[in-house]
Length: 141
Image 1 (cartoon, rainbow, N blue to C red):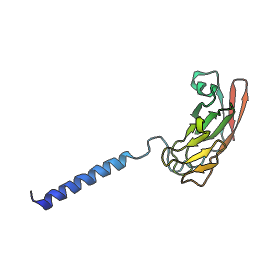
Image 2: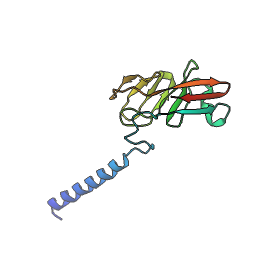
Image 3: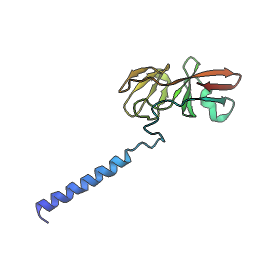
Image 4: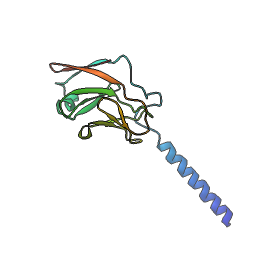
């Protein structure tokens, strides 16, 4: 094998490796590019006495249900916003210590009221109403 053939084979191997890695970068969180706006017509309830919803019993806890992040702030208030970033629909996380929602893809952050506080985004999160009655938390548009 001469030098030209060797360099050509290395180049093809590198290209194949890069292609495989790029395919592996595809989002695998179930989101899609059309999911940058929050769901409409939201109307569901969470029974806080169930183990599946136990995260909401403590200040700072959160969970995702029906395309919505439902969280309990450090002060004990319940809040609900769309689960996906308004930039590229990656799933957000609630960071109670910083009182914000965070996108792990590009580092965008949103306040607890859904307003953009940092990052490549220009649109706020869709915010939903919450109402606690006994142990039932209603989330609605």
